[in-house]
Structures are given as structure tokens and as C-alpha cells.
Image (cartoon, rainbow over all chains, first blue to last red; front, side, top):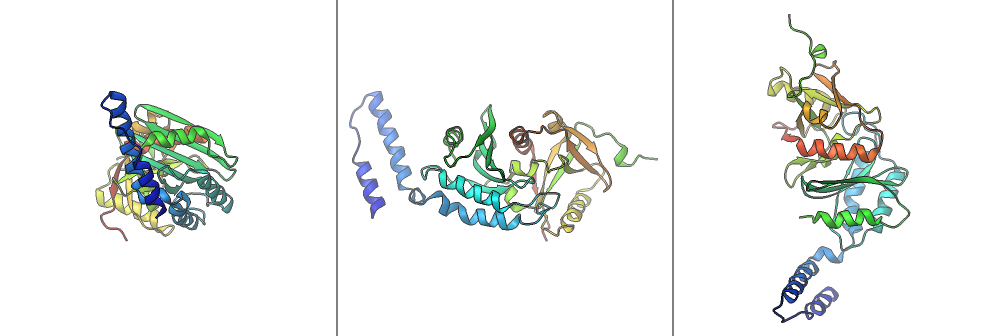
Length: 162
Length: 134
């Protein structure tokens, strides 16, 4: 199988050194090996998240879907959420999908209550994000033009989803 | 004669419930709630129910009334104290009827600022599952 070949090829790279640098490289390689063995590594984020995304769009089709005063999730928002998902590299962890009372679709990368990132996709295609990483907070808005913004990708990688 | 809850100022240590009627607002992994549950709606008035003078059973009944208006399933509630919202520069106001209804207002207009506040509220909230889901 191709994944197995890739893994095997990758595993052949290593080091027998005993220096601090060699140990560090060995650790990094071991981590990468573990990552490569995860079956989900080979499937696009889209395939994993699309069923949940479709369910969210279906749940939020009417006003008040949250039991209060929520706005519906529009097709435009759904389409933009798909485009955002497509722009994400396959190597990142899979987010969970949700919706907010203002009709935005959310993607959440969660490690703990103190380490998480939430990205909202608006009907206009803006990406609003907020993250808690230990004592640090980050939030802002990025315009989406078909490529995942570097700021958001950087935050996703810092969450280290479990 | 006691005052109606609508006229009683909400103390900082008073508990408020945000009823959860959407399953995707709950993280099954550790039984916590997402920030999505605390994002204000279009009118910027986030509805909550005061625990004030309500038994546990009455509190769930209040949640069921909210669920029945949709109708939808009452999955649980996210409890937080008024001071948690006030520490985020939000205001908490009594807004009966219905009985014990309150609103969290004074949200910033910018969505990212709303999200970071909602994250803090969700982090502080205690999620309680409905013991008798429909």
C-alpha cells in the first residue's frame, strides 16, 4: 500500500548518534512516524468533516434552531465553510463543527478548556477567530480568498489537539 | 411582601443557566460547552435563567418551557455566576417575564471580541446534563 511505502521510506531516515542534537532528531522522527501511522493522515479533512458540516446546515435551516433567537445558517455560509475546509492542509487535526446564534458556522480545534481555537465562517466569507493558549489570548478577523490564512494555520498547529 | 424577581437586582454571586438545546454545543469528550452557546444573537441579548429561588426541579421545568417553544430537546444547561459575565465588561439584567428570565448585554460589536468573551464564559461555565431528557 502506498501509505505503508511512504511510512517505510520515512522510517529509514534516522540517526545513531548520541549527542543532544541526535537525540532531538530521533525524537522528532519518532513523532513523525507516529503521525504517519495514523490512518486519518491519508484522508482529507473534507471527507472527515463534510458529514458533520452537512448536518449543521440541516439543523440550522430555520430561525430559532437553538431554541432561542438564532438566525438560520444560509447556503452561502455553508459554501464558504466548504471552501475554507478545502483550503486546509491534510496534515492538521480535524476540527469539530458547530453553529452560532448569528448563523455563522464554527470549526473548533480543542485540546483542553485552556487550549483551543474557534473559527467562525460568516455569510460574507470572513473568518473570525478566537483562541486561548494557556494564559495567552488571540483573536481577530481574516478575509478568506481561497487560501487558509497563515495566522489561523499557525494557531491550529499550536493547539495540539488530543 | 417579596419583590418579583424582575425587580430584584442580580447579585454578583447569583447563578445563571444557559439552557442547551443544540447537541453540537456540548463536547462529548469532557462534558464541557463550546463558546458557540454564548455568542449573542442578532439583538445582542443573550438569554439566561436565574437560579434565584428555584429548586433544581423548577429550574429544569423552566428549561423545558424554552425547549417546548421550538420544540427541541433540552440536553442540559451551562451554569455560570453573574460576576463571570461582569468581569468581561458585560451587564446582566433581570428581564422577566418569563419568571427568572435575565439577559446578558453590552457586548462589543466586533465578532472576534464577542468570541473571545464567549470563550471565557464557556471556560468558566459548569455543564449539567438534563437528568430526564425527552
